[in-house]
Image 1 (cartoon, one colour):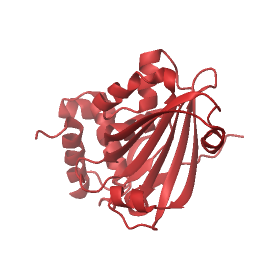
Image 2 (cartoon, rainbow, N blue to C red):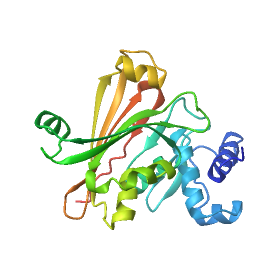
Image 3 (tube, rainbow, N blue to C red):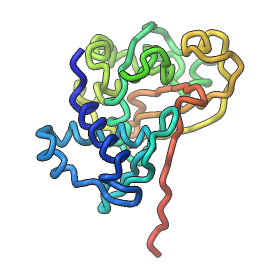
Image 4 (cartoon, rainbow, N blue to C red):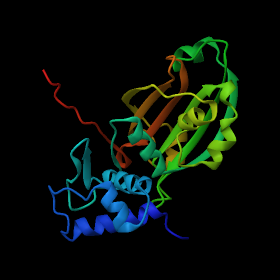
Length: 243
């Protein structure tokens, strides 16, 4: 299998960091410079840098650049999320494998639990995400809920395995993702999920719920993702406001 281009760039940069070409504390070349250096698009460079972030090798800061934070990759997956662009990059570095699709009407109890509208038709896409370098260890299980009127994106989600379902809805239906609400909480892996994710049942896990809202503040999609604890670290940067 021919390696995905961003993985080739990420590996080259990782090797350069490991051998001291880019020491800890230094800045990597700009996206434009890396594009010229490796003869790839800036889109590919961004995906490669996202991979380095997952490995804990670099951090990004607006108007500063990409700084080397470690010379050796961390175990598991570390992802800095500060924007919609970061979420898109995260999806690009992983592959979605859809397991089940369900169409349903949200009964009162289900609607209350998931923040859906009672009596409205929805669909749920359940999938696992894997990393190309660790196919035997799924990164997470994700349930994506969306209104039935967006059901045309289901076959597209099967084709575009590295694109967020909410982003596909945005592209295909002329919507705009205006905000993403995110909630993170600790849960325990159920027997069923433990088997799918190849992780011990009853172990702590990270559950991330994201609600994607359009320009009218209406829910476009809701995702519930569960990561085994040793395979994902969520990193958020908090900056001091100017007073």
